Image (cartoon, rainbow, N blue to C red; front, side, top):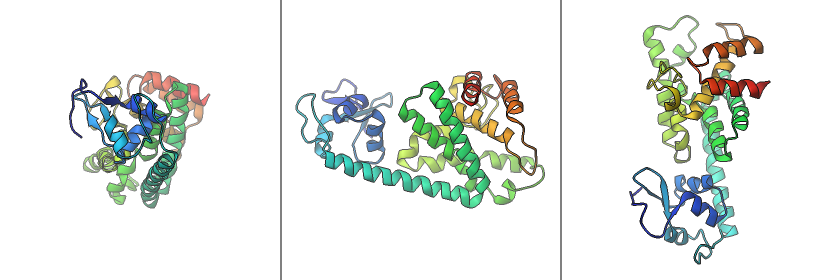
Length: 266
């Protein structure tokens, strides 16, 4: 995408384009990521859309001044194409996870459900909530690039094996980053193992340097780990797990998100 000056005439912000099309700003971003709508970028990295590009691709029937409406036929067609692309891609990724480990898929589904509950408590906008759920579903997709021998090893991992397992967040980011409409969640996938105190991986981010969705996923994943039985450990009760989250608050986990999670499950 070409860099532009925000002072350039006839340039629409994502929100302004959404208002003209009578859709949400996230839908405009989806059009851009799917290649349906050309977009420019400001030096600050924000999307800008030329009014002429809206007309050129036939997304608007007519756009006199500030008025305009999306053709119902065009909208329906774009909706079908985008929805088909979303569903097919996500199904393929989830199928890849399930093929490697059905337990891992169940874990991801539970984490996504916990994240949805927290998103509702936090009052996140629909678009952010949807991206959070997607990131939660796919947060461990990078494990398909890790040897099954290592992931299923019954005993303690060696330092080298532990290092290899830790690569899954970066592998996941690489996989997600190759899918245009999933690019907005790539950072969340990369950083879901960061710690609030800066001692996590892969980049040692701390506090609000860690993307909010990643902080939310971290709490959800930790709770699910604590409450799920495995060959290596017994499951904790809900009360025990919540106490453990409180002990990790301010260290591994964001205290505000821990409080939100506790409120969402009580």
